[in-house]
Amino acid sequence: MQRNRFLFVLLVCVGLAGCRADLRDLQTASVEKLASWQVQGADLTLCDANSSDTREREGVIPGAVLLSNYRDYDPVAELPGDKGAKLVFYCHSEYCGAAGDAARKAIAAGYRDVWVMAPGIQGWKQAGKPVGKATPAGGAS
Image (cartoon, rainbow, N blue to C red):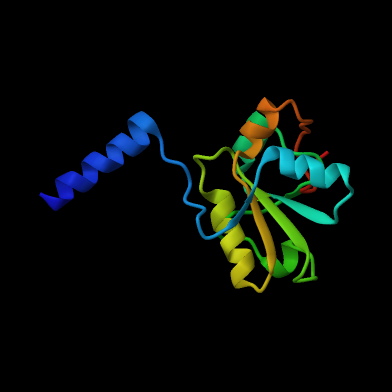
């Protein structure tokens, strides 16, 4: 009985209504907040947690660091050396959990100013913000 109920909830969540990523334990920023930080010249590092297929299809936020893999990336090699740096992670949309997972990995590595832009690249594009193409060198243009 318990298993059937779990499967029902899973099917409803994934198939019909969609489930928003659980970000309750993380600081979140709206598209507007991220855009205002950029306009103000805030010192921040944008981190794209999307797959290469998603980046190719949707584009990337210009200037973002393209993580090698949202689960298995190496924080020492791929993030700034300053553990106090403001990091803003994003993925596809509010229904994608990759940004949250990548942000939690950064926190576990000792980063203290970690944010997730929950609407992701979809929300960024819907707000009319600029989108670039992923470059082969692992950055965004």
